[in-house]
Image (cartoon, chains in turn cyan, orange, green, yellow):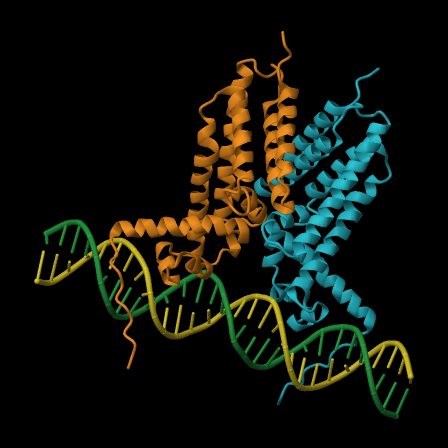
Length: 210
Length: 210
DNA sequence: AGATAGTACGAACGATCGTGCTAACTTGTC
DNA sequence: GACAAGTTAGCACGATCGTTCGTACTATCT
């Protein structure tokens, strides 16, 4: 008796979108552990239950898959880190952005920590469209911090001669370093240390009480 | 007529060490661009002119190759970054360590920037002996900074109530962030910005003039 | 109803991956 | 001079890589 394979279940066009999102969701997770290059289509197929060519059909090439994965990671970052902090303004927004970044790392939203920290380190030395997209999104984040800091300065929450560029560079450095140390050492206390450093750095730039 | 392959050139036993060093030298360079996982034995064979099995014979497995590559990268780091700074003591040593790290990045000693920054980001989420070795060497670096800072405090070059752990965390964060930004954006000015931040951070911890 | 586009599968491709085996050739030791 | 130890090359293996192709089915448009 020859086994008759079961017929394909129904595929609607909205199912296509759902499958695509399922793939990208797993791709973002996998990429934080294996890297955007180590992210293989076979492994992604196994993780999602979709066939290899099914995965491939949604993106014409691996590079396209990587580009869309970076885009999906940005969306996650905006939802989880950026959006909650936009309820505040000025210096409070700056603090909130740092805090929600640290929480996003601490709660292991992604298994390998911040997607963009991993991607920046991996793709740094390799030119190409994927690297450029990662760099562009990184710039968005830096610009967001910079605008908040500038608003804080114009509100006199920071000293009038504060170098906003240096402050933002420092704050970003601290939270990213916390991510790296947290992932490398599995040590939750570094997040609290980073919180302390963020407070200290900001207070160093604050306007002296008149 | 069958082509007679040329006979092998003479191989002395010290040639073995030289070949091994040649391989590891290229491995450290390649790993900063392709990652320790992306570092393939075939590519390493092409880069060095040694055959694939010739490379393989020196290390019994890829993991062993990775471990030795990490060890070689540490030796390079000690020679280039650490050793020159040991001529000074206390706060001057702390400054010198940061400065020689930044110079090591700025001069593109390795094509992909700091080896350990890349390795930490890549291996962070993947347990195993290679990750543990990277973490151990990273701790060596942090300990070195910490000892210099503690000596500086005991010499009263830093405020007596300085939190040395936070200072070191902050300084390391800044120089590593400079590495990442330099590699990702090909922007030499970030190194100077980092120099400014290092000075600012240290001055924030300095003892007030009596 | 028929054509078209979208969705997913299975099979297979050439390339490269890490790895193992054998042989040739060296140097150093008995 | 035999022999072990070390160094390197050549060849081939099974697995996995990204990619392509052909096929089947569904939903939408004409």
